[in-house]
Length: 45
Image: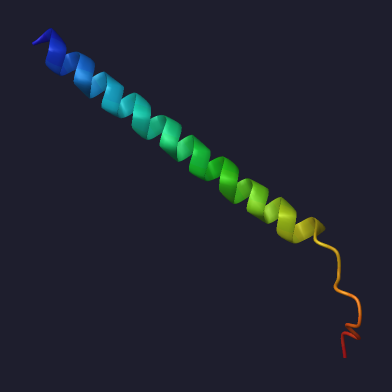
């Protein structure tokens, strides 16, 4: 029974780490997009 509990806790911990990594990546992508420089030669018209 203790092994099953340990496996369940490890799976939950892995899921939480995975979700945190995905959230950090999404935030980094937003920052990259927001701070990306405008390409040269673009007139915007």
